[in-house]
Amino acid sequence: MEASHQRKAIGEFLRRRRTSLSPKQLGLPEGYTRRRTPGLRREEVAQLADVSLTWYTWLEQGRDVAASPEVLDRLAAALHLTPAEREYLYALAGRYASLGRDLSAYQLSPAFVQLVNNTPYPFFVIGPENRLIAWNAVASELLSDFSELPPENMQMLWLAFLQPEFRTKIVNWEQSTKVALSFYRKLYDRSADQPWYTKLIGELKERSKEFAEWWPLHEVADKNGLQVEIEHTSMGRLAFEIITFTQINDLENLMCCIYMPLPDTQTAEKLAAWHQANRTKTRI
Image (tube, rainbow, N blue to C red):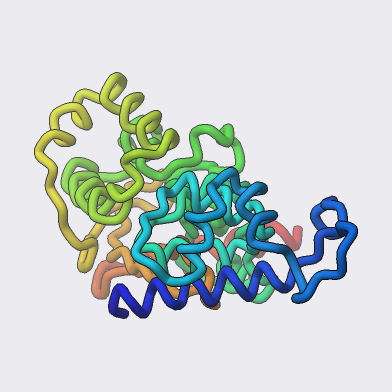
């Protein structure tokens, strides 16, 4: 989309949202005079968002004005934008949303949760800020008991470098983690000015000698074809290719990871036997 069309789209979108809200909804006085048009006035939005009326008017008119992430956040709050609307506004403005909201905003449908749980292979979902938000039982069995982790340690990059189970269970830890780090840089470096990002990177630099060594290399790569080997206490050596996809019922900033068994490794058969044994235990 050309810049002029994006600016026009921003103006139309903001105007529609402004006129769809009433002063009463936001606790504003109705005023002493009848409103000529429905919804909020421009000056009311400007006041709520702490921006000048002139600047906001130019934004609605599609003029070439820049909007920082902080200003977009204030506009989104002033206009009571939904998460999807907020991300749409950021995309039109050429910005990456700060995603500072509660992860509960990303509600996976019951049918999708059932898909995660019923998939016979390790399956987990990563949400905003690189945080783990859903997983199935076999993922916990092979990687780590995610349900026992404190919320602050649920970031996948943190787990890869600082969770002891990952290092002991993943046979090719160095190779796979280097690729995961390069994929992380490609996906998340646009968030480098956000507090969660700087906090995570700072902690990893301080606590992981491998991270401190690899991070300055600034390597960027795709995750396509990444293979990982896991050593399990009862199933033995398991071999997977990590399959990722991001389109989940139009929810943005989510990524699914499925560990698909490699052919001719007996991995699928071992997992099938494990599932059967656990079903039997449950019935007993």
